[in-house]
Length: 249
Image 1 (tube, rainbow, N blue to C red):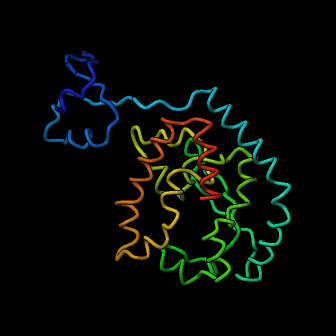
Image 2: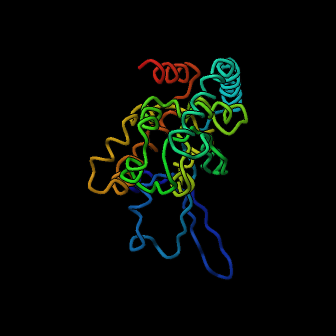
């Protein structure tokens, strides 16, 4: 079965009387992991090609035009609520209401993501620390997702999209390999299919004995699969649907 998945492309390179075969393989993690060292001929080297298709230039242009149009339309209505929420966050947490953090964006480039502060202090390494630092106002903010209103400015700047994979801290998206790196070909989004599925992620993690392990072993791989499918099936209609579902579902 593994042999059948090897693409029929190979070349023989002769250099200093050494013959070396380079097999071109699909970037499939499951298959790649099955080719362990004990099964790889010493004279073979393995490379992979991406079989998933990223968005075309036309699709990227349509998506960007949609993002700009909706963001410009929403911002005048969001300014006053945003100012009020920032003031309330300042009172609630005792720190500046605007929270800025470096996240991994398109092409793996770091960018500052903007959020309304919902936590006290600065130690928020796991869900238990987050819950202990969360104010009642911050809990409401996070549950309602209103803490992400400032990300409309990220969309205007071109760092983010309205819909797409959520931007992660370093150590996740920047470590993707093979076909999974297709996720880095699009701007991260304020919402998206994975965000909707895991809208109660904090509660789910809090139920686990080891939240970090559960996230790395279960949630993160599932998000990667969902986001890869989102890119393969992308259409403007799907972005409109995910926005609608995020607001009204």
